[in-house]
Image 1 (tube, helix red, strand yellow):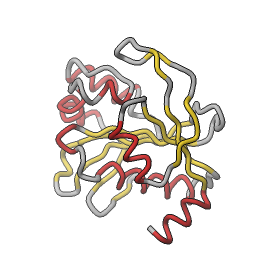
Image 2: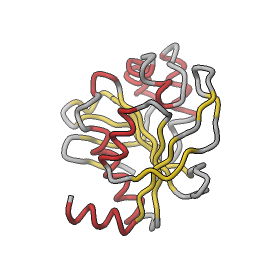
Image 3: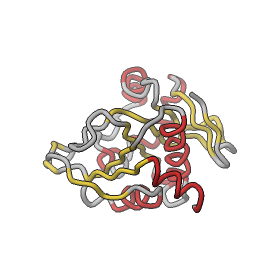
Length: 180
């Protein structure tokens, strides 16, 4: 899958993305908020591209004006939300220099459209760790509403915390798309 939005290109990860992945994934404020440890080397980033980011519905986020540099990632995977086991969940992260510019909401809206229109999903989930207000704002901006906290899990900082789960039903997304 490859998608182009007004400002972004969403495409599968490539091994040659390792250097730009590392540039942003080594930041101690990026990975832990998304549930993973900061990358320690370009080689680790390359290995993560091969093993984790190569999943079929995981996409690199690039600016249309700078298509040679990945700045983040978005993806769809089966949720672990207690009330939605197996339904699609959207996950994302973006490099700190790009925070607050609306890039991730733009990418998430595109994946929502894909989940509902191409996959026929009835509901799509999104989650964040407690205290990750930036992620919560993205989720709410995209029309998701809070559903529940999941069971506590071990986060990269060694603390156990739940995931805060949000969902949007297809009919709510359709209303939002018509009026938003």
